[in-house]
Length: 303
Image (cartoon, rainbow, N blue to C red; front, side):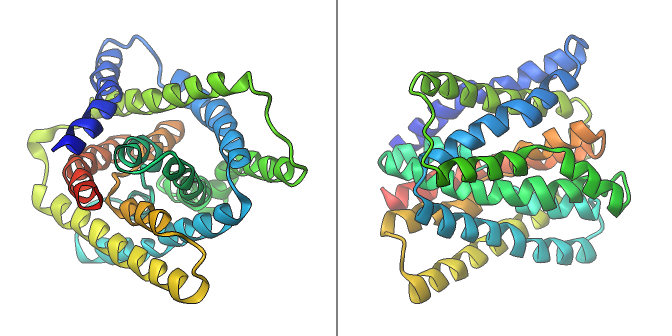
């Protein structure tokens, strides 16, 4: 139960930003663009550059590839769920399956059961899921509103991929950020998580929880979690038998990813595009409830 306490204590300040966002939206005090634009165009790219520069290239390649692959392959169960059950828009369902909240849920989780190296592992994993989310995922969300060509153009406007290429270039030249940037970037990390939860709270104002089809969402989230576990297990087995480059802790950290909720990035994208804002927030909230149970249970096994 100690892990439950540690995890909830770490998450609680950020979770408080959800009702804050709800209040801000209800009172029309802050436009959503004042939150999602700085997130997408300034804060997240800066954090990405720092994260890439802090990781080992070998771990970055293998873990980012594995997490990108997980985000890609889990889209196929999403397509099957769309065809099987009448409910959410197809692009939104695909994005919901492939967006994993690696940092917000991941960092307090791995800190509770592993050492500091586990955070570095998690950052490598995040880069892979981020690359998928900010390219394919963003395009999928945009398709809820635009055609495919317009969606790709919208995705190319987001600077994540350019920040990643810049970070890789700097890393190849062994560039290191000045030390005085470290505390600033730590604060920015907190701001990003808080802002994402605030935006989630603002989009929750659109949800009528009394009219929810809990049977549908239970099936969809069950398929998302179950298929992600199977795919992650296959990828871990393939890495072990073919390459065997990861240590046991790195594999344990990776195995937690399927249990993480849908990333708040999904509702940031939806707000940016003005599309599927209500349903994106709904999927995130419901997946978060599931993860608040499953993640600590798995953490207890590892501890």
